[in-house]
Image (cartoon, rainbow, N blue to C red; front, side, top):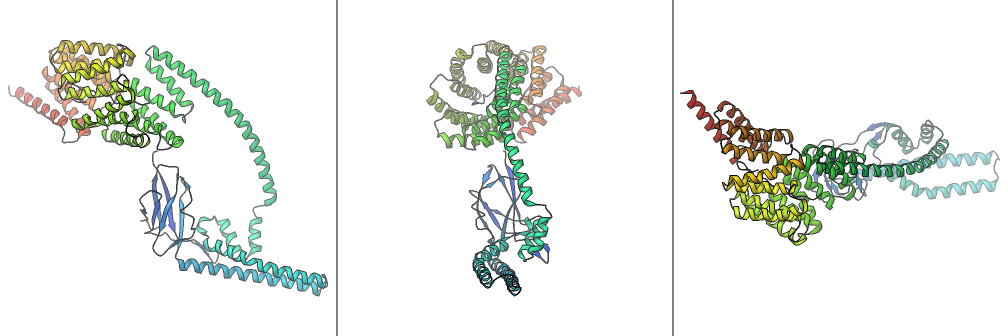
Length: 599
């Protein structure tokens, strides 16, 4: 799925998991008072720090906080509030899973926590003392009724007092539990049961528990259900193995269909079978990537391609983690889609993320890093920063040649982008030299009639067009048109650019019938494929408007140019050479219309 953005330079115009949020609360304990819940209070002003992240200040009165989370597992460095301490000392050291359920951090002042522990211990001691007295009275009654012998009497009392000594650990454990218990987090039933136990109302607690039925019988029933589930799991495992084998076979068949139709240049049908394969298993990152790449490269359906790339990115992060080449490749693919859609800010964000991951994993000298240099250079090119674009393109070329040698398609991609940049700078000899090097690499591999070779011929045609060698330019445009029409179909953006330049040549020759035919085809492709708010659409619309102006259709030209201005403003803002060019043309058309009206 590794690929380079390939730049296009036109004659008139030079031509982006997914974090989820984990919520939580910092609060005091909920308590039971006279059998009624008194909820805990949120601790505004506490700070909560996820490991490796900047602490978050709790600003809400109810103690709510939240973190954006990219990873499914995380832990906390600290939870702090002046004058308070965590009830559960191990709360920060635990590993948590991203969940829709909030995380609760319960805090109390040290004085309140100590008082709660002493109160619980005193209450439990009183309850146990009461039970001891009741048991002593029972033993005394049995002796008076001569139901037990003197020896049995002494043994019963001795055991009772031994049990009392061992209760010290029980008292400590129960006091700790009930002093830390947050009644807010219990449902009403277990809130009442715990309250009864804490207060020594054991008969009432037992009665409440019995309302749920015979626990021994219910456990036996659940154990039987568990055995039945295990049997079903065994059967399911066998069924899953058969299902996986069937999926694999269907996937192979889909891919064979895909290749069959691709060989006939029936790209829409070829794409259908790749999408069908991707739907068989949405967790298969390779299948999502293949579908996205084909839709991007051959169909130019950037919306669909983006959907597959985003699904692939989510799965790659789940299966491989953030610091992984597959994850980096999906970040790059998404960035390239945003580039083609004209959202350069989003493109730069995703391409930079890919670059950071790859450089962290592989270091500087890696093909993926070279690709990132080239693609980020393309963003600088689109921003009009030729110096920065040149720096990044040359870095990409140097690394690609070091990794692959001189004759590799990635090296050719670097030469193409350098050629486009030299063409923009009017260094035609350097531009043609770069394109010639790229062609010598790609043409023996893909053939002259391929889209790969056609694209290079198109770029060479642009150079000759700028050099005013119109005949040679049209020869190259024709080679490019035929190659791309046969492999990409007639609705691909590359064809739109070729049609645009051919139309521009005819317009410059005052052959407006032919010019309008190609320029209109170009505009239709861009409006259909990349949408109305896109640099390519603005480019074609500008060319159509200029051609109408030159034919004297001033009102139609003005209408198109005003629409072009809206597009340029939406994309580039108010201060941009492209918008300035459009405004100048509007002034020119309006002046001509005023001149005509005054005649």
